[in-house]
Length: 220
Image (cartoon, rainbow, N blue to C red; front, side, top):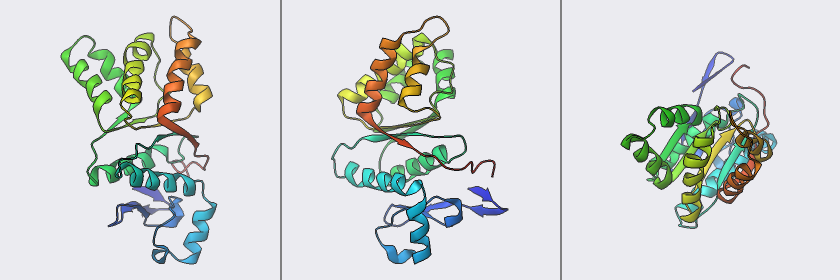
């Protein structure tokens, strides 16, 4: 839930599995399959929000995924507080409710976990889960301290495995593809544009880039 003007606002899951906003004021809107559930005013509000295309895409992904059509995920980027993590988390819950196996991870914490477990069987099992889980959602990539080891020995093989096996992936970030390429090229010891570009090409294969450019709901 989010607090908006002192009011508790949330998003629920409809019986047909679609994401459905309890209150339009939060700005988490959706093109519904049954418009009778919305007033004309609600529909007009949805038509003007940056979330309209995004949530329509997420519902289309669910339709295609559960019809075995191998759809692409989404690389969701935009300013802090615009609701990227919240939306992807609720989306992940919806997928789990419909029977998918989903791994949702906050990337800076995931990187620290992988580094602290270096060389252990736990690390190997975690990397295997990131490779093989039906749908992986990585939250806030680009906020971590990038290292050559994580980029080349962990993230690269995970992305390649998912590319080879048509396993969908979602990410959120404050950086677009161009900016994340620059971030991934720079470690504490080297700059390698070639390896970073190869990673971003895999990201583009797995995900469509989408900008969620909206106000800061966290601080407003």
